Image (cartoon, rainbow, N blue to C red; front, side, top):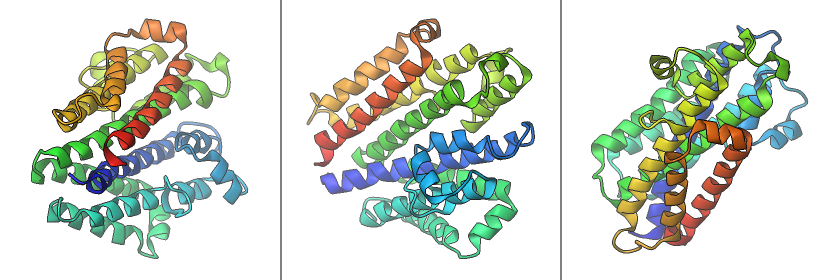
Length: 309
């Protein structure tokens, strides 16, 4: 496969997943406002999760619901906004139309046109829950189309690899922001507000019901254990790394079985597989997540070197 084609399919998967994660964080935060005092403060962690806090404060005078929704959803200068992610996914799909199904192209193109309707920002602000649900449904639709209409060959594995790496990165960011930033005062740990916020974290990654099937208590340790080390929850860091490794092996063997990216991903996966939450918290949850985010960034760079350049 041409490196240009592989690169486009890989980033197609990443951008679709990123759009869904932004929509999830926004939708949960809208619900969270109903349970928390004050309107403005809860949006700062969401902006922080997106990794564009500096860009936000350069363009907007203050944090408000309208400014946050505009920046995270329709601001074309923000590369992680939903509209920017869908546009980037569409451009990558356009470049490789001969390698993807017509159903996938149609789904991405139709949603792109919907987002670029001049009336859409006004409609989204008027009915935000319906709008952000439509973004999540778009992402899940495209993932289903990729699964059901594309041959599970190298191209499919690149799309899957991009999706899993992006999902791992976003899950780690959401968990880190809650643990390190979100609480206004450490004295509130274990209080009702703390429980509300940890439940919001679970909802933001679609883990609320699955977590409560296995855990009776919502504690920082239980939530971190589930989102980092669960073997079977599809958005846990461990699960994402294991699935990414499977796809990368399918891509690399037998041509590049000694690829540095495969070695790096294997080390990250085994670290999650053989760690316990007690060990992670003892050494520092924030520090561990920060280490994983650096490794995920290095992994993306190494994949580019191994397969795209």
